[in-house]
Length: 291
Image (cartoon, rainbow, N blue to C red; front, side, top):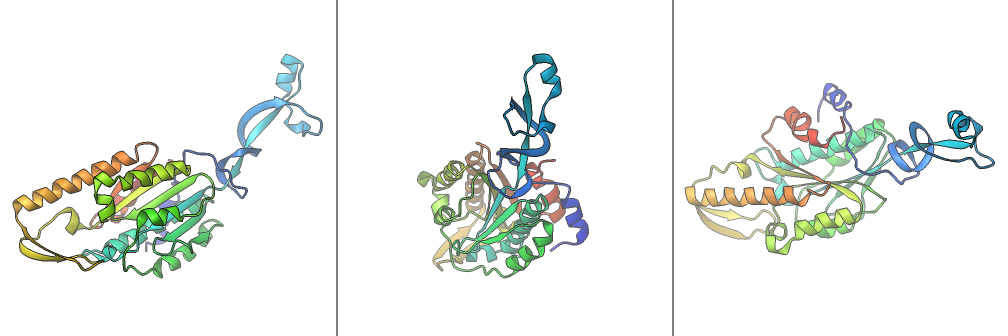
């Protein structure tokens, strides 16, 4: 998708997390377990059998009591990436699925480069996630998996989300245009319920809304017959200044609502297919990185 120079630049970043890992595999994330990393955690009283090399002699000299220094153990975290593979992702002169695939690759690379575990899902086939770990040497496998995806039919995002495997606290990345009727109906609050569900599962939501230029900047004019790509329903509409303005207002309201939905620890980024890829990854997505 990109050359080695791009990924060398990407190697300077890692995904920010707001939790400690509870997994047993070694990695670079701070764990709830105590171990032997370089980062000090706490003191506790000496118990027979403790490693005397971890005894704090300065405390012993001041208090005449024996205390052991404890350190954070570093474990891997889990980054779950859910890709919307519905037919609507084929839309646009620069189709949305191309950018969605790139974003999935970027998120996976950042995770693997930090020795995290990646669980990547096709939302139409949640029972068979692609599970990969082992550092960035495993990244070519992710690229091959992404290239094998087919974008067709429709998906139920909330139903898909509920089928995601739980492996303790982590990051969940949702990549979609989010232009589904169930999500657009504000009174149903389905999007808000999805965010609440992720927080309940101790996940940091990362929402990457992928829209094409034609959706962000409408240029169609006249009376048109619009056909839904997923269910083939038809709508006859006259595109004039008034209807375009109404559409833009609704889109802005949706974006504001999605930003509001992640304000309790998550992150929302609007991803435009016409945006320069380097600017998108290294500027727009910078809010995701622990620099």
